[in-house]
Image: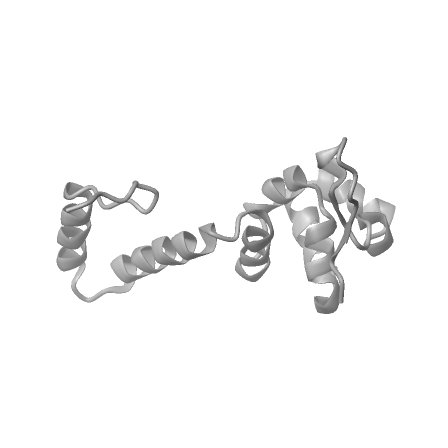
Length: 134
């Protein structure tokens, strides 16, 4: 299934890649309005009501600003799909940070986790840091 339609116009790079199915064809106007201006509970309800087979197309059809706005209130499964649509390379960083947090919370050796975090930060290990030669 094609998720994007390609437009080879050279004069307008913003229109080069558009969703194959527009958002207005996937959601009712009231649902789109709720996602933009509703309360967090209303937005969660609309996101939960989207059929599983339409989730990917809906996320792709959403403007990036709307995806970013909804990321904080979406379920973990939906949030992961939004991260993949917005910035796929951040999925690995997100997974690692989440695993580190869960390991520190649920570990029987929390002091050990605290020391590992200290030394991790002490040596300035950072995922976006440029590679250094030895």
